[in-house]
Amino acid sequence: MGDFFASFNWVEIFKASMVLFAVVDIVGSIPIIIKLKEQSGEIHALRASAVSFGIMILFLIVGESILQLFGVEVEAFAVAGSFILFAMALEMILGIKLFQGEVSGKTASVVPLAFPIIAGAGSMTSIVSLRAEYHEINIAIAIFLNIIVVFTVLKLTRRIERLLGEGGIAILEKVFGIILLAIAVKLFSSNAKELFA
Image 1 (tube, rainbow, N blue to C red):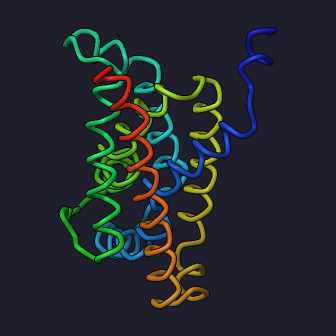
Image 2 (image 1 turned 180 degrees about the vertical axis):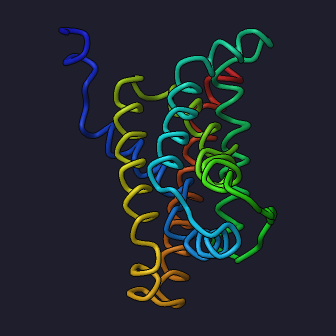
């Protein structure tokens, strides 16, 4: 219990939450979610959120072990992750779509919504990269907070779309794209020094 309180840090939780919020970009995914809902008939918000949470927590726990199995340092993965985050940020800012998923049937809440739209390569890369800087408990709390946001957005998708409009969603996507770009640069600079030292 003492270790928990020693590791618990609101600043780390906030920073990790912002990284994951920008990467998951659930608000920017509203048009995709609406399309999935039209194609599959219904999106189960709780199921999608629970599966996403499970995938991300699992990767938080065993992700580093998998890297060690292949002889890859966390710093090296963090640098590689910074390139992926950089590419994702450019995608958000410039409006480029590198992945277009098609869906049908009742599994839409799990594939492709939970994976790879919510808990995809970007979020997994971010989680392992964040472990190079923050304590696990703070990242886990950040994941949980983001899943709450994901669940809320999934439940209120149509209302949010009507409230923000296409222009509002586009502005949010650009803003978080710039934040993610800055995070990618910082992630690269802080871990590249350790890697090449």
